[in-house]
Length: 209
Image (tube, rainbow, N blue to C red; front, side, top):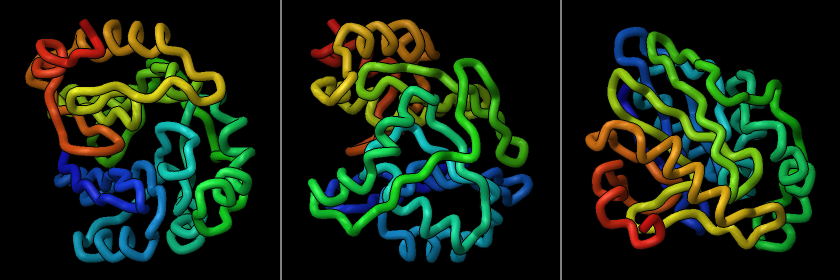
């Protein structure tokens, strides 16, 4: 699985373009903003995007979704259904944080723990890890040993848990049970900041001791 990280929005949110190099089928994960920039990179890669996947419902991760859907006519999948209330508040979120007005929407379907999403020949296992938001999911590709985690886990940090329906103990428990049990060489793609590995975070992340 090839991953191209595309930082977007003033929050430097890591949108990810994941590509099956065998089939040239791709998916866009967390298109938080700057849709024309994302679409330019898709065009340069010469790939066919067949879906948008959302890790959670925060504005900086979903704000460009509808503009891209209008161009590509692809389904929006995820997050887990407990994040509906975040997606319903997108217009209020955009006004609060000074983003372009963003209408509320619902995905074409929600994701569930343990299901497998296919992108070309890539198989992404869905890990439901609440705590930052109640419906937050991560996506794990066992074959390439890569995991996209949104705002669950960062290089040397963890996601905030002081938002509505955030939960510190739930977040830490989910990270320890579902992420730190992955092979230590697994590359972690967070929603902000640089990549890391499971082994590094297990050994040195001060929030997980």
